[in-house]
Image (cartoon, rainbow, N blue to C red):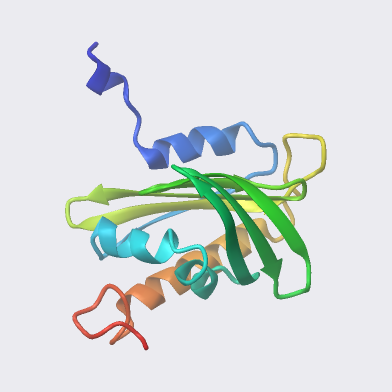
Length: 162
């Protein structure tokens, strides 16, 4: 087996990461937009990310060093989290003491396979509180798909929203 065959793509990597976190759920969907367009929304923590994540009011990147990132997230319910992790094209894994966010995207021949996971973390353990997680992830995926297909939004022929 050569090095290329041993590589796993980012969606598969997210499945592996999710399998190691008790209570984690993963939602996947193929979206009819190219990877660069999809990731322009997903990877924009301070802009696009909050437009499809149901619980996020805002995210502010505090520090970046290569693909390492530190950010401050605020939920619609007033909770705050200082997130640390990795953000690079097609891959994001951020966590705080109480929150985990995982996103991955890979090219599927002009479309993009997207996977999302995350939720409220049980402090001191590799576990997420499973209540409502799947529903929220499915809602995030639907909002992302809608954002990418809405006329005049990223992922369409129209101008970006202003």
